[in-house]
Image (cartoon, rainbow, N blue to C red; front, side, top):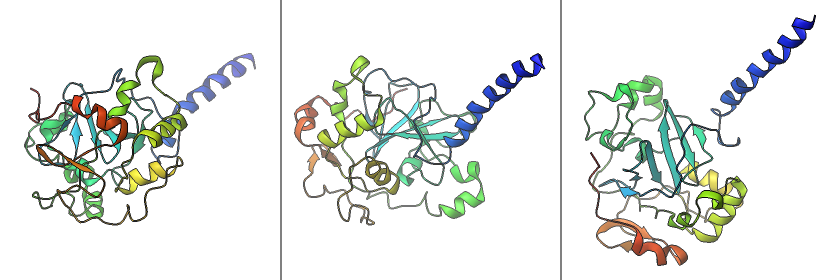
Length: 252
């Protein structure tokens, strides 16, 4: 009996991580998960040429920023976060925005083994990797007019002021700060849902399908030298001059 009582807590303890892992893969309503990635300071973000997406060439991670959210691909799973160092929420393949999926292989700083042999200038072969059912649900994800794309969301450079002990790990605190300092309204359903869950409703009509364009929307100033980029307002406008631009070539 004593052996049984000792073994029972150990057995129950093995269930908790499994249940947490399952919960982490069914939506974006659960607390953040630890994925073994730590970004101690705000990363240097560079726009992927021709795409409304940024990547982090100095990080050893498949790390992107698009439409108000950070996206990270690790261990065959996509994760998203409102802040640069998480907490991260897993997102299934059906939730990942197409422009994130379209980023060419060469901008993945830690490409998975199965990327080998794939053209570096083209998107990963997600249909081949995730199967025909996924490709049928996301039909057309790899076909678009490359001359046009949605307005590029400005990087949330206000987050540069938050690192070390100042970094807000509480999700609600993160959204309070974001609501005060970041005025961008997302277009993608997953971004809108994330913003709306934490007290920041998207502007009316922001979720309607937008006609692809390289011109800035009302209230946004095009970034000099990069069509489609927008300079943020308020605090970010003051810091905007510090954001390095023009280094669009991927790091070796």
